[in-house]
Length: 306
Image (cartoon, rainbow, N blue to C red):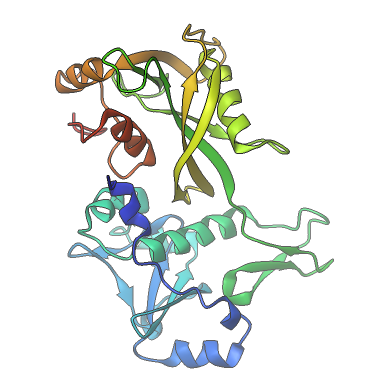
């Protein structure tokens, strides 16, 4: 069974990391008229006629020049423009608004886009040296930041986050159930799998067990890895798991972000979704993949359908 979220990682580019310190090569490729550049302002880019607007180097505005890599015989860069550029260019769109067409395949270049956005988010958040407070300057074609005072080097960070579908009952039986929750800030009817960040010194499997217990009170035993999804909003790698509950009583902490958590059989889930009382995440999310993998096929509806 294949899932829409996997299309966001399809056809990755060659990141040519060894070329990031080759200044002569970088300048040569920047001068090549075949080279293409994506202008990123904050988390906004331009899309024209259903495609990302890749421009020639001479048409790019000032900004931090970032090498993304090579693909199809071309070099691909991003320019991280000043946030003021976004204010002057009202036709720029949020990358989150492009996720559905990226997953559907109507817009290409998702790996290049996610690479660029991940670096843009990191550059925006990493403004000063955490050791001495000195200013930072980019190196290695935008993939390192070095302190101008103490010389300490900063590298792009990626935060591991577990996202999990927890089940209870005999696998495949009519009364087998999955656990879904909803946050208080979400519109009525939105449900998703549980998720949370891995803590220092913690295994991914133990992070699954801890997060589920903290958020729902449900205890989890067996945990199995399913897949992953890059999620640079701002710097996460979503690691998908399925787990088996060893208890089913739900107990929500009033101070926690979950407003509700419920068990759904397959029949419950289908009827609630068809009636519009439950909305699941979009196909772009690995959360949707976890649910449909357990359900055994596609389900109708998604967030934003009403």
